[in-house]
Image (cartoon, rainbow, N blue to C red; front, side):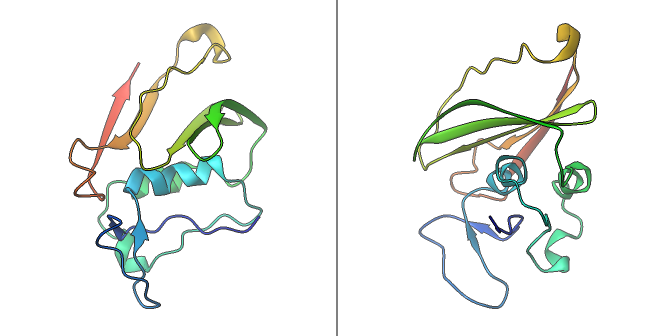
Length: 142
């Protein structure tokens, strides 16, 4: 599969206009980040104009996410509704979740994490991401 995630001009469905220059992407910024984990590609890259990433706090995730994986686990999902995938590279796990246009809360089994003691850096939609898809919240836990 060849897919180029990472578009940072995120817009709502209503605001979307297809165009070749400075393309828009429907959906939230964190959806674009999750695509790097959920979709595996032999040539992972960012797909937007370099200027679009400059100064964006979320670009830190793209610097860290690997292009190849040692282990993959599908944690939950239902076709056309949602999917949650965990991938390991070395000692680090990355978890990506995608949903259709419906918001949802998921409880996911994380018992595969060693010793149950991990530090999580979470990139999530901000509370207003439905209206402002570029808004994210980054939190650290652990």
